[in-house]
Length: 271
Image 1 (cartoon, rainbow, N blue to C red):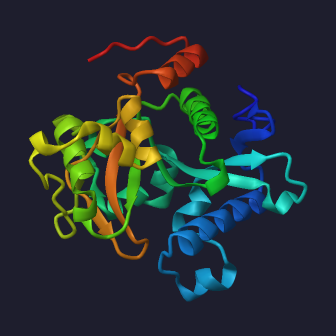
Image 2 (tube, rainbow, N blue to C red; image 1 turned 180 degrees about the vertical axis):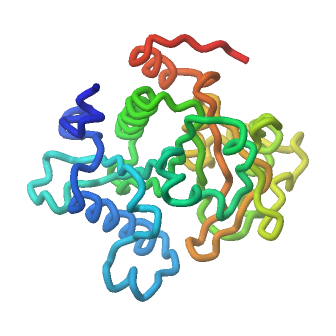
């Protein structure tokens, strides 16, 4: 069993460390970071309870693992968590009663026909740490987790800031025409909230501009072979336009795959 999964030192790059949260105090710190970014930086609507606690929390937090990014150079240990990602495996979702994503997207094709699922969400990193090096370290931590739990599919909601899909028409259309998930496991926005992604003629899209404007999380998924579901969800509470991203670890590409293969000895076919 890896030291990472044992919640030990995790993996590090200089003073930056990625590992699982060790205790409730660290989970609360991760929730406080989520509050700072979601509500203070991006102005999500907050309930009275969340405002009083100054933490972002919900029903699913008690069932999940919390991946955290720590800056060990910060003397105040209560402020050393600078990034986080929430991980909900299939066995944990069964205890919770559902996946969080199912509130926005129909993921029945994934849930009914595949096992070894991992939902990833509530991703955020403090602005000074939104660098390529830190994000790569975070993905390496995810790879460790995926390899240990033998995950086949990663999925979850990823967001564009703002609630007007037309602002992101080129990016949404690009994803729809170039990265739509295979039909056999394609998520779809629920009918009552379905928002069309095919908004512009694909021949008019400038790829370089789109790739520059894609949110880093979505761009990261696409770089390693990820897909999106059909339809977006406009989340007025969080002030975002969400797409459902999904990645089959058997077909992923690039450095994430190489890291995964080193951990498991697996080799993947390109389908």
